[in-house]
Structure formats: structure tokens, C-alpha cells
Amino acid sequence: MTLLQQLVKKGVIEREKASSLEFEIKESGKKEEEVILERRICSESFLFDLKSKNLKIPLKDVTVAEVPLETLGMIPGETARHYQMIPLAKKEKVLEVGMVYPEDLKAQEALKFLARQQNYTYQVFLITPTTFSELLKQYRTLKREVGKALEELEVEMKEEVRVRPRTAAEFERLAEEAPITKIVAVVLRHAVEGRASDIHIEPVREKLRVRFRLLGILHSSIFLPLRVHPAVVARIKILSNLKIDETRIPQDGRFSTTIDGKNIDFRVSTFPTTLGEKVAIRVLDPSVGLKTFEELGLEKRNFEVVKAAIEKPYGLILATGPTGCGKTTTLYAVLQVLNKDGVNIVTLEDPVEYFIEGVNQSQARPEIGYDFAIGLRHVIRQDPDIIMVGEVRDPETASLATHAALTGHIVLSTLHTSNALGVIPRLLDLGVQSYLIPPTLSIAIAQRLVRKLCDDCKKPVSPKKEIRDLILKEIEELPPKTKEDFKTSEKLTIYKATGCRKCNNEGYTGRIGLFEILSMTDQLSDIILKMPEEREILKEAKRQGMINMKQDGILKVLAGVTTIEEVLRVAEEK
Image (cartoon, rainbow, N blue to C red):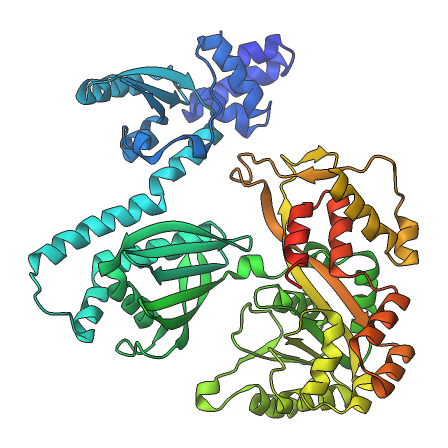
């Protein structure tokens, strides 16, 4: 009995519809399963569970993490792709093989041939097309691809017996050759496909370590022989148009390349260490950079405060926090709201991270004297309505940004302080006169990033006593208006990360912001003019209903967005 006939018998599909599909299968030459899934007659799991019972072959659900790379090597990639079969596990002399179409006689013959060649027996399991696709990607892993390139490099290096160190010119030649070019290209591609925000290439005592930053956490991805370090660095320098023979001082550069049909920018920084040059590469993928306020995690009171600030005709909006906390992403979200036909938006950035249609974006180049201060003078002459400056880092830029806000412009920028309360003392330190801050500063946004729980596998749990007490304490200290919206129950529920196929067994997918936003009020204006101390600013922040980052995090924990561990991790950084 065919699968379609069984689906008719179970009442999933009408007989007439099944007859029509049978004709389509015959005419198109497609597999029965392909057509059923394309037409969404039933779910993949239901269909293959039915097929498993029909063939009396067990259906196996296996994740990428469960299949070692050495096991994959038992069946060549091209053979696996052609016959849609893949090795799952090796137990002594028995190889477990997953097949999408175990009824395919040609696939069975190919499997028998491979078994004879490699002297093993096999056991067949049924797997779904989705499982097969996920596992097939493993053939193109970072270790496997880099390993092949290293083998090629070994052959080349053995052909040249060296008794003296290579010169910069020789490293440049080696960097342009296929194996090194391939190694760098593979590392870049895997970083983009894995949605890494940064790549760190760093020499350690006996190896060259490559690490990816995923969701804010650094993970070691691969170790390379230390002898390839100069050639790998030289290749990256060539791409970034940096000086290859200069290894004593840091250098900065950038380059672009197309990966999987997307134009990706890479921002490069080299740094001399005692073991050699370290390279840090920021991955700027335009497809994941621009976000809405909701995606950022701005909600309720924080959302209302930001919305009110950007509706004003002028004013200074400052995003603050450490490097990599999402300040620029927040400002881009504001720009997307302000970006309309009737306004002229000009930005001065270092670097331009993501391109926004309709916005005039300019790249600062300090090495040729085009820094934020000089550039801002020219931006003001461009008749802008809205200005974004990458960072306020010196008194001249602070003065120009303040005066631009005072003369009728909306000015967006970033500042390095640990929290929103520190923005005012920082502006004073940069030489901004206290009487200029109240009429110019609209809001100060401080933020951190936490990992978001995977919605498919997060698990509700009751918090331990110390965590429960901490949560209740923070709830008790919430501003009255926020506290009204929150009803404390006897039983608090939080969530923990578990891990599934969708999140790569991490338990987290993506990141979200924790925010605290201080807005300018008459009371804050008086404090700035009379006694601009942080404790006085804190009193006013509480009076105006500001939620601090820890409290914002606790609310997101109770909403099932993130974990208490993530909130405490970033809250302790403050």
C-alpha cells in the first residue's frame, strides 16, 4: 500500500485528491514523499512515522551534535548527497546509516559496495529529509575544509626546504596562494553562516587559535599550526589593504566580500602581542543588523520615553555602554523611524556598519585628518535635519554635537559610560557647560545585551529560594507605575535553557537588550545646574519612573525572554 493510499485510509486526504497527486507523481518523476510534503498534506514527522511502520524500519531522530566528523567520513559526501543516506554512528564493526529512501534499490546496492570496501556491516534507519539536510551540512565543516587546505599547504611547504626565515615578500606570495586563501575564505564563510559577530585569530604558545563570538560569548572553533600564522595574517592584511611588513604597531582596515549572495563587510584590527600579531575581525552582515524597537527589547515605559524623544523637533539622544553592547544598532533603529522623505539625515560613522536607504552616510577617516570633530563641522553645512555621529569621544566633538542640538537638529551619538546616570558627569568632563545640557539632552539610553531563550525548548522552573528573594526584592523596588502592571503571585515561574535542534543545542537564539533610560525633566535640569552628583541624579531617575537594567532584565526573565543567569552576568558588569 502506498503512502497516499494509507493517508486516504486514515482520512487525511480525499480519494479524488490522492488520485490527482498520483498522476502528478507519475508525470513529474518526483518521489511520493516529496509531493506530499510540497502540498502540505501532512507534517513531515507524521508522514515518516507512517513510512517507518510501513517499511518496518525504525525512524531515528538524530542531531548534528550526535554525529562525530570521523563517522561522517565513512560515506563520501557526494555519495551521501546522491543517495540521500548518511552515517549516524559506528559501534565496533557496525555502522548505523540513516536513509531517506531505504526502499531505493540503487542506494542499497551502493551501501553494500561501500560496506564491502571498508569491511563493516551496517544497520539501516529511516530519517526525515530535514534531518538529512542538517547532517549533510556537516560535510562542509570548518575543521574538515580547513584540514584539506592544510594538507595542500603541507605539500607546498615540503617542496621548499627553508633554512632561513621567510621575508615579508615571501609571506605575501604564500598568502596569495590557494591553500592560505582557502583557509581564510572558509573561516570567514563559517563565521557568517554561524552568525558570529566577531572572529579572533590569535597565536598561543604552540598553535594558532581561531575563535568566534556567538551571542556575545567567545567559542574556540579551530586550532591551526602556528607556522601558518604569518601567512594567514598577511592574507587578511592584503584583503584589508594594510601594511604587510608592519608588525610592530596596531593597524585598522576593512574589506567586503560576497558570501552566499550577500555582501558582507569585515572590520579588521591587528594588534601586536609577545607571540605575534592578533587579528580581530568584526562581521557586519546587513541582513541581521537593522532591527525594530520591539526586536531590540524596548517596551512599555522605555518604548514610550524613546518615542517621545524622537518626536521632538530637536535634541541630543545618547546611547551609552561598553563596546559591543548594541549602541549603534539602537541608534539605527531610531534612524529607521526618523527616515522620511521630508528630512535630510546625515551620519558620520567609523565604520559605516549597515547601509540605510535614503540616509547620507559618511565614513570617518582619522588617518587623513577626517575625524568626528572635523567631519561634524562639514556635516552641519549640509543642511541636515538629523545628524548621527559615531561617538562623542573628545571635547570638540561634544561641543559641536551640543551646539547642533541647541540650534534645531536631532543629534544621535554614543558615549562610553557604565550607566545612564553617568552621561551627565561625562558630558561635564568633556567640557560641555552645565547650562547647555538641559536644553539639549533629550534622553540617555544605557544598555547591555543578553542571550534570548529558544522558544522551542525553554523549560519553566520554580526559582531557588535565593533567586526568588532576589526577584521579589527587585520587584518591590520597581517604580509605582510599572509595579501596578505587575501582579506578584505566590508561585514565581522562570525559565531555563535546555537545547534543541533549532538552537543548535545552545538553549538560546539571538540576543535582546536590557535598557535604562533617563529623560530630561525640569527637576533634572535644576540638579544639573545646582548639584550634578550621581546620587542626586539617581533620586530624580527614581522619581521619573526609570527602570534600571537589572529590573528590566528581571521583567524579561519573568516573561520567559531570557534567564536569570544572563541578567546577573551583565548586571554585574555595570
